[in-house]
Each structure stands twice: as C-alpha cells, then as structure tokens.
Image (cartoon, rainbow, N blue to C red):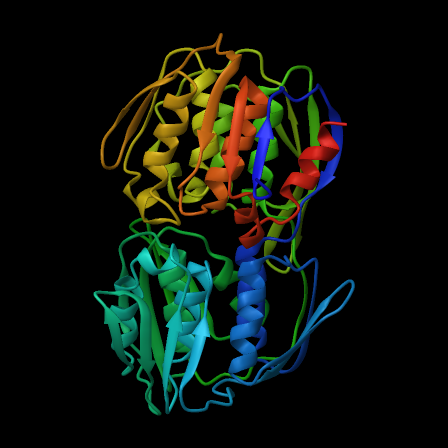
Length: 440
C-alpha cells in the first residue's frame, strides 16, 4: 500500500499563499535549446520532475554536460549540430511525449542511427505525427506502426521544408522548429493555434524567426544555421499544475488561495476563461512580462453557485491538459455541461476523456460520452457518503488522473483509495506536499 493514498475527509477551509514548481513545457524546452547554445546556460526554478530529469539524461548521452545545483541547473551547450554522437545510442524519454517528440527534431542532422524508447504509457502514443514532417528534412525512421521504440537516422544535409500542422499540437510544431535550426534555408510552418513557448524563446534569443496570423492559422518562418548564445532563464510556475489547486479552492468551503509567479501565456489560460464562464472568481494581479512570457499572481475564492457551460471549442487547445479537473466543476454546477471536439484527450498518457467520465460516474454524476465529447449532468448538492468506497487504479499511471482524483476526494467526500501516487513524479513531485500544507 506504500504507493497508494487513502482519503476519507474533505479538506478544511483554508486561506493560503503557495508557490508551484517551474513550468514543465518551459523546463524541457529550455534544456533542449540550451543544448544548442554555445556555452553555459543557467535556469532557476527548473522543474525537477522525472520528465525533466529524463531530458537531462538524454542530453548527457548526446554529449551535453549538465549540473543540478541547490538553486539552479547549468547546461553546457555545444552549439547547433554539436551533439557528440556515437553508434548504438538509445535515448529513454520515460513518460515524456514532449521530450520524445522534440528531441527528434534535433536529431535530423546526425550520422548514426539513434533509438528512442519510453515507458509503457508513452509507447502507446502516436509518433507518426512528428515522423511524417521530420522525414521531409531527409531523416529516416523505423518504428512499430508509429509507436515507440522509434529509430531515427538523420542526414548531414537536412533541407528546409513547408509544413502544415493541422492538429493544434505544440509538440509537432516545436519538433519541426528545432529541426529547422539545422538547415541551410527557410522553413515555413502553417499551424493551427497551440502553445507558443518555442516561438517566444526563439524571439527572446533573437533567432531569425518571423510569425504572423492568417485565417486563424499561425505562419512561422525560421531560417536555420544560426548561432545561439547561452541564456539564463527563471522558469515561471506551471499553470497546469496550479489548476488542481485553483479548482480545489473553488470547490472548497470558505477558502481563498494565491498562487505566485504563474505563467499566464495566452495559449495556456483556457482554464481561467472557462472557470470565469462557470462563475468562479479568479483574479490576476502583478501581471508582467518576462523574456516574452507573461506571468502573474493568481487569486481564487470558493464558489457557492457554479454555472453549467457549453464550452467554446475555441478554448480547447489552451485548456487541453486541464479538462479532467475542469470536469469536477461541471459535476457541481447547476444544469448540463457539454464539452466537444476533445478526441485529443484520448491520445494523452491515458484515455483521459474516458477516465474523466469514469471518475464522475464513480461519484454519482451521470455522463454521456462519445469518442470526442462528454455531457455532464451537474448536481449542486453533490456530497458523497463517507462510507462509499471509491477505488482509482489501472489508469496507466497518468499523473493527471491521480491528481484529479485527489481533488475530487478532498472536495466531495467519500472513502477513496487512489493507487500509483508515484505517478506525480513525472510532472509535479511536490503535489501532495502542497496539499498537506493547505490542509493544516
């Protein structure tokens, strides 16, 4: 039972200020791009999760040295195309789709075959979405129907490409952007709206990148063979991690919370817009710009009367990682909430749309589920009997299923047994520690 958590009581009212660990998307991107810089780059508040440590370990196998010190991490980059490649290298991406897909972009310029593997969950995910565009640069791939393990053999003369990214996947777009750095020429990307962290880092580093929007698509032009200067970066806190505490506060009685220094990139704050539509009081203060990213302190209070929502699909991409915990608010809202065009949720660490429905059904909430949508029949008077046993297990150790289940248990009551608490090590190792600090 050491890897299981038992929750039998609702959380007590709280009024707290918390800090969240560094943004995972930015932590991984900083490490990968720092490896392409010429010299030592330093980050502060780097997320020290398994996904980020896997990134550093993969870079080490490619000849990139790094140091994790008490208050910072240092990476000693070797420049564009600077990896020290050897025969028979295997890179283990663990649970990180971001790492596995983005690092492929950096390997289109290589003279050896490199194998990329991952854990059981990652090995079920689709990699054809990055293999197809990266092949256009001249790289060769071998895979199991687009699943890991994937072997990549680069080319010594990668060519710039034109690429239409139709899914709204920041990982696919970023993989192509990193590959473009290796080319002699201009790569042009036409992309459905998604997270733009990579574009903002490129702009901060004064790389030759041009962006504009046309017909609701982002047009990105990148010229390769540029020198990247070493750079220091204080990673802002992760809004995806903060979302669990924001929802917990909204669902708790007589509670208030402030989360400091959070990344509020406009491509990431769909959850805040959705919560406001549902009647949650969320306020941003101390808004400022840091290295092209926007950061702020987030204030949230308990909400007595939640509104149901027909969620605008325009918010899907900017809240894709938060929908599981958003569904808990819909469970407590008056009326029927409807979320659609969410098939992408079932291509995450677990089939999250299905798991969202399972969790809600287990607490007595009716749902209607299709392959890409969910209707949630809310109950404002939802209280779970303290003797009702709810067991959450066999969810491919998906960290977001675990954390959503914890928020549900603390908010609604019941007798919960939640397995695989070590799943949070991939993205948010301090999650339970912060939960404990709120419950004192």
